[in-house]
Image (tube, rainbow, N blue to C red; front, side, top):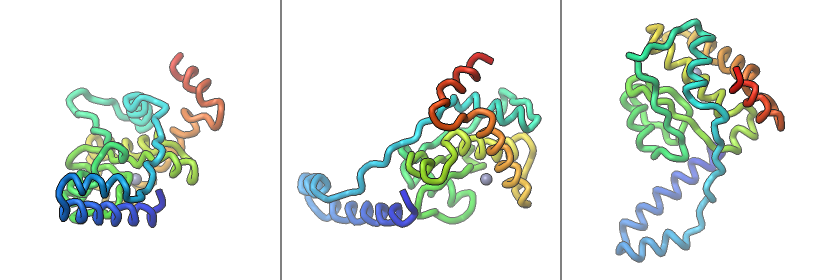
Length: 185
Ligand SMILES: [Zn+2]
């Protein structure tokens, strides 16, 4: 979903809530059923297990994962209310984003991921390498004591993400073959 469409969808959702609360419950349901709405977005799926991605990223960063440091929870946009991201963002950065965004929330140890398929089709990349990027920030925060005060953190995340994509995401129809090869390692 484009930013503009997201904002429109958010506005439409707010308007629906206002309408629904103003009407008796059953009427509100009927309004919801007949109101034209944005069709649900197609959802991108991970090609790799999140643990596999985390281990690959940690190896690349020269970090040994420890069982006493919990891995982050992964919150996909398609299954996560915007309010949850807003609350996490407000705690960490002091503002509530209007739309869902891909980010790592240090305090709550959560990766938020936009998983709309069209976004990846339009801009390239995959859900997997977006997750790899956010997992770099997780390792920076919880293993390396990074306080995200310099541009280096982001540069490192982009570099590892790019490496992950080249290493583990094969383009086009050869993806299944690449996964098999990885599984056999
Ligand atoms: Zn980043």
